[in-house]
Length: 83
Image (tube, rainbow, N blue to C red; front, side, top):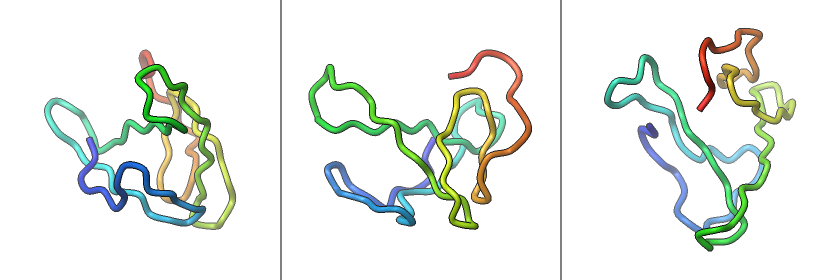
């Protein structure tokens, strides 16, 4: 559900880089982003935990089932199972 991407496969990014903008397609109720990072391109490569930076510069590690925006984590939790 990404509206546009600012990076390509294999490109290295650093804190503060904008990697893309979330969007909405199909039956999604609101714009959102499914995100995963891998160290290798192998089909069985494990995902890597990635910290994000809020507008104020504070870092946070996203957790499934919670809402986030450009300002960082929200106190609101999603209803239903997380994806």
